[in-house]
Image (cartoon, rainbow, N blue to C red; front, side, top):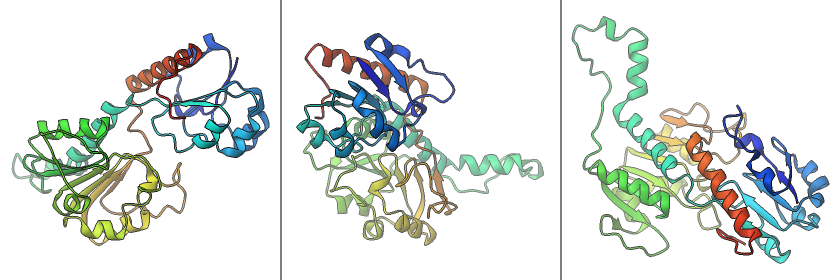
Amino acid sequence: MKILIADCATLTQNNDLDITVFEKYGDVVYNKNISRSELLNTVHEYDMILCNKTIIDRVVIESAKKLKFIGLLATGYNNIDVTAAKESGITVCNAGSYSTSAVAQQVFAYILNHYNAVNRYNDFVQNGGWQQSPTFSVLCFPTDELKDKTIGIIGYGSIGKRVAEIALAFEMNVLVYTRTPKSDNRVRFTSLDELLKNSDIITPHCPLNEQSKEMFNKETFSKMKDRAFFINTARGGIINEQDLAEALKSGKLSGAAIDVLNHEPMSKDCVLKGVPNLIITPHTAWAPLETRKRLLGIVEDNIKAFLNGTPKNKVS
């Protein structure tokens, strides 16, 4: 088989991860970040494509005469036209749940930094503020306990559940809104409006689709509790970025932390650049080395299962 890894640079940029494991299944072509024109010109050569965020739409699929398998190096698959793939007899498999622990960890990194003012206090000390203090303890920035605060989780898949478990360990109250009925007596399931109204922290963990596109907008932010803290480690498209900027500038939100944007890498004219009380990380919640090793293992298992005629983690 001839195998394309379409966007190697999303997996490793400093050779900390061995991605040659797939060479046992065929001849592998490595591309750091394949352009659309190159993909369209060469896709007819490949039996298998492994990709993270490369867009494989109907036009690409109709040019892929030999293609039988698309292995996603990710959980989300909104970059693949799964309908066109199914029509062409192409199996598409994702890597579900590989990043559960890492993403939940990132959520609480944001939360702890926000409520403990870690960055602000470090800057204060590094700039000589503590050296000039008349007392041993300087209380110049407000901090808060997480105990008894309410966290609202939207979506209750593996990541949402892990976030809830960590929140419960901090003795927080957990509200959950999900379109799919669940059972968990440790948390309270509620409507979206009630969650927005009563949550001190709101963190969505849902896929990007027609229902979730820009679900966080001017109206949604206006329904949130005053001074709430908003987090997004899901997909950039679930937020109207201009409306988030306005909610932060107006003081409606006490802060926000996001790992994803509508356009990645960040565009030069991104409306969120420089907005106060906003932390932006460059889509790294999934990126610990252990997490990426786990990802490769799942993708390799998906290939083995496909070749054995028993595909798993199949989305098309």
